[in-house]
Amino acid sequence: MSQPVSQLINKLVCENLKTLVPYESARRLFAASDNTQDEQVPVWLNANESPYANDFAVKSDLFNRYPDCQPSAVINPYAAYAGVNHKQLLVSRGADEGIELLIRAFCTSGQDNILICPPTYGMYAISAETCNIGIHKAPLNTDFSLDLEAIKTFKDKVNLVFICSPNNPTGTSVAAEQIEQVLNHFIDSALVVVDEAYIEFDIDNTWASQLAKYPNLVVLRTLSKAFALAGLRCGFTIANEEVIHTLLKVIAPYPMPEPVAQIAAQALSEKGLLTMQQQVSAIQTEKDLLKKSLVSLGDIKLVGDDNANFILFRTAQKQALMNYLVSHKMFIRDQSKQLNLANCLRITVGSSAQNQQLLGLITSFYQQSGNQS
Ligand SMILES: *Cc1c(COP(=O)(O)O)cnc(C)c1O
Image (cartoon, rainbow, N blue to C red; front, side, top):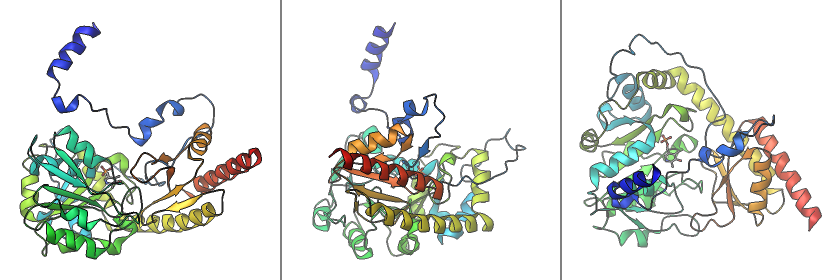
């Protein structure tokens, strides 16, 4: 059976998909380790999720109807929260769908290119590849600032410029003057997409208020990180009205399931926003504690900055440490394959108890490896 099927698939599959492999989500990477029979509770500090799981109520009386494409119960409070007009906002299945919609709407397959600045979030390149769009790279400087000179050489060669700030996985925020230069340089040739997935951890650096000044500015947001709703799949694209109007041409007719819209509306209520802000400030406190303890351990060196809900560090014993943590069902993320991040691991800030557990394990790892050497 399988032989004829694979022959058929090979014949039909899009040329640009042949070499691609499905996205390795943080969770999928460790699916096997999660299935072992022992009683240890796994701790997931590898996907920048929130440690908080908040309560929501769902009403089923509208489940027999198709949902609104852009439910005003979600759009209006988020527009108010972000300080934009509701026409400058699109809600989608996570910020990831926003990335894909931008690529599909503004890049012609087999012809156009995007620009990314690695090390950075992986989905820009993945979405471009699946859409058969070219990827140009202007790597970050060694201090993780933008290499403006390199970026500027791509004028008229790219349709979208992706800038992640705070950047995943370096935790660095891009200086306002740098983003301003990029916006001006590409003002009549490319959209500049500022990915603000972690902006609640660095709220003073948002670009959402600058739409009037820059027709080419796009800002991505999400409920997955600070709002503790990664499981909901709800993200936002903020841009000038005509950009949003164009994205509406490619979005699915019903991207927002009714239960998602109901829960998002609750998360964006006055009470929901207050909860989010309290949880962000608790995570910030935990982050500082975790950082202070980490630097006192073994050969750990912090890398980048901590403007989001994670900490990046370098250790010569990266693989042994990673194996040790996995064997104790403590999952953090290996970032060492990223450009200029050799031997780097990323820890998502968890609950106080989770962070203590992690520190305990790292401490005993370095004690053991110290004894051996
Ligand atoms: C997590 C993340 C996203 C994706 O957010 P979703 O709304 O869950 O799709 C986008 N950009 C960056 C930089 C992220 O880290």
